[in-house]
Image 1 (spheres, rainbow, N blue to C red):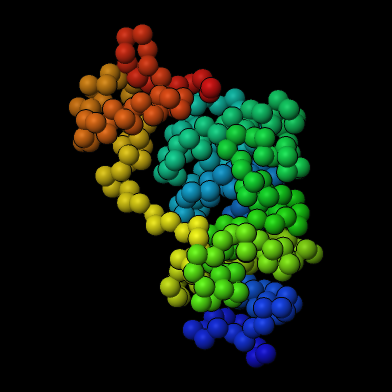
Image 2: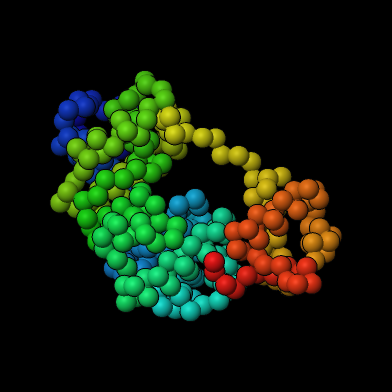
Length: 288
């Protein structure tokens, strides 16, 4: 095999049964082109926990902008647990999917109450927390505690599709996960997963997105004109000034009446906003 230190449009000579060869390719790229992220230098599991929740549905560059500010305002689980919902939502603005901010605060409260303010290490304990699914729980274990967990996310998926299924379509994650487990660098899973993610990010900038070969691939819907845009605007409005009646919300925001009503109803049902006896809406400070 020729020396490999970067990516070329010709896939490196690669035998799918050679784990060490695959690891060398990924590690070589990371040594020369690994990305610098503030949470990668963190020793505090809380910092990793926050970053993983932020990264669930938000692009890396946007998280990079908000992460330090959020950690400064809420430096540990206890600070986050006693903060008001409005404070947390204000700090979260720009990251999207505001429900994650609620889940993060609820998880912090549970960690303080059950785990003494320290991030739990076991998978079952992590999955029991609000907003933490199997993949996020395993990512937290890998990055916060350097545990050799097996999980998949979009950039990791791209790498395995690129190397192991170069001409296949509709490849399921069930086919990828055994390969991820087989090739896992168990001596240093934290760095290994960072290296995989960076290689996947590079692939997406260099060639057609390999994730399109995945059965899990979904085209991201447009934000402009979406219900998500309306929901976010309502939350920002109520954070700035409240309470508002439904008619006042409709007057303040440039969205269709039906979509605004649907967004208000969803936000109320999810516990992000509340309606008073006088039918006026504000941010709900009580997490249900």
